[in-house]
Length: 165
Image 1 (cartoon, rainbow, N blue to C red):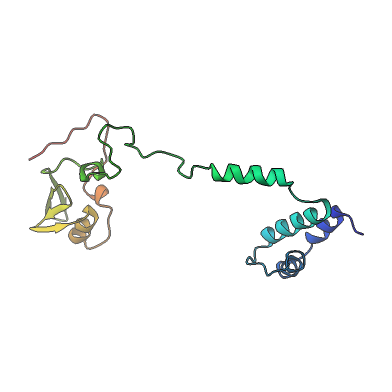
Image 2: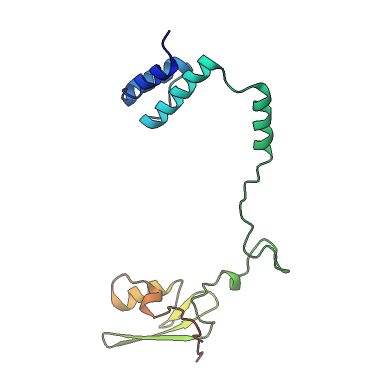
């Protein structure tokens, strides 16, 4: 009988197709993966389990207990501890912090064309039409794709206050 380290050494020399064959041999079913590293690890683990035994029943029970106690959410929602948190955020909480308050008029001149955009509670108004994003307005003005925050100069700087008109 060949030792486990020698078998694992042989596995390292195999290509993915040969590892899939070995997987079928030791597991009794087709591998779903074609990844050589994954197949190598699974087959090597299985050879070790077959030779030396797997986890004890006690270890399996403990692993199942730990798995059942796992809390899938790692972080609480940002506003979880606020007094008015209801699980659903209002539209004011969803607003991008880079945007000035509703009613503000953003202006930008581009190639002789003045663009005045009014910030609404939800969206923007430009030349009598509603838009969902500043980028769409920047595209309308320039004829090419732009980042709307960049186009309108909305880089929030410390101490900057917004003026509404």
